[in-house]
Image (tube, rainbow, N blue to C red; front, side, top):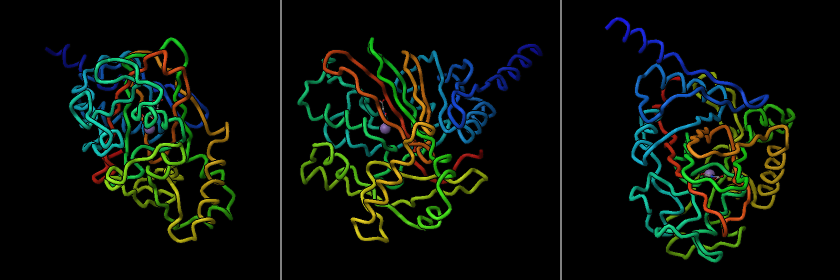
Length: 303
Ligand code: OGA
Ligand code: MN
């Protein structure tokens, strides 16, 4: 009995994190997230999220419901108002499980013209999840179920370091500004239009351009291709500012990638990172991932 207790204590403190980049992203040592319930391990993951912004967990084996339950244990309430939910029924039967795949309900690869495919490949533009909603997404957890035999990476941008590297004049200029985020706008730019009825369900949301956190976490730029205007400015000036800031954030020094293997679960904090999918031959190879995203609402778990 005593030995079992000792084992349990050791397990609770056993997660270590190895940095993957100079300023953000880390890989966790092996842990089975489907069975991870102890509060001290969950707290260790939250603290590592605050430090690194993106964490990679390899070798997971999760059902959809296990993925949902882990997300709830880690960070509370889940996001369900996705753009995919507006386009059609979810093949996992739960809108909290976003189907990030090029596969239909029958298991076939979506055709080149399929609306769900065109909506899906819009993940190839830099964004943060659910910034067009309020509350927006906080943690996103993307789990790799089927990985193609060719590279199909996800790239991440470190928005806290990007903020720190702005010149002081720009920091002053953007202090207190808010941006309107709309997925109807960003999809339109990509050549994808929602019907008026669909668009009515996606009105967009306003968020501060600079995020400051209640704990000691460093401030972050909060941007996405969904951002289409600065509320306090006329539209053209606001769009130009957003374009300049986006270009700043996606410089190579702020960007790192994740190369997927089946069973990876990657968690990112949408408040301090942007991400995008890299292109691959998606009319030939299947790529199936599921994402669960938490809502950026209080209470934020203690970090
Ligand atoms: C997402 C996303 C990128 C990818 O799941 O939110 O943007 O590489 N995914 O699939
Ligand atoms: Mn995304």
